[in-house]
Length: 292
Image (cartoon, helix red, strand yellow):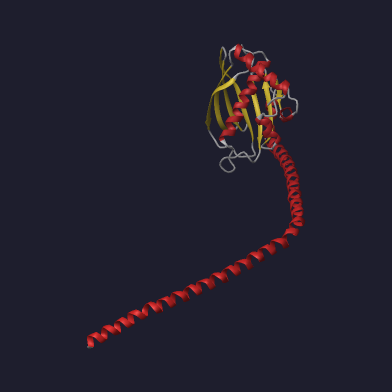
């Protein structure tokens, strides 16, 4: 009897659990629906608020945007004007540095200029003139001078000794290692000086070929560091001449008897006559048409 009563009690308990479970499920569903309804309402309220805020800002943007654009472009124009003025100031400062540097080197510069047969071949004014007979506006050293990277550049040719002297006053922004002139610029000065010697020899009719000649080999031995802002001398002369091949040598120093910064030698080769004619024809066509 005790066992049967316990079984009936168990069935009663078992039968009541589903009832409580269904009730709890219905309560949870009701609670979930209520939360969803509340969330939807707040979302609609937020959307309405955002729309209202957007509509409130809509008219102001048409007032603010033109003013912002005017300030932007006005600021750009002012920045461009400042940049142009600053560039001019930099060039003027470069000229003053060149004057100071040249004043220090004036003794050996006067010595070179006073040599018998020595004539000026080129200077900064010739480099930067608008209608140069040979150089165009893409010439590297003309750009260096006009931008104050190189403060001054003058070339002299000794017609008797057949030597070309480049006197270069370096600016401040010419460095690789801080305050030390970049070795690549030193090499470029040497190569340009070789070109000056080549051109002077051609004008003197001292070469067996006509037309252009190009750098085929350039060897530079660096001896000492060059400080920025110095006036240096690059002396070039002929080493040997074989047909269309011209070997030249150079010394970079702070004067004829001063510290040697670098030595170099180079091979320039003139193209064959047919190739030279093509190169000259292309060059003249560019000059006539203005095609860069």
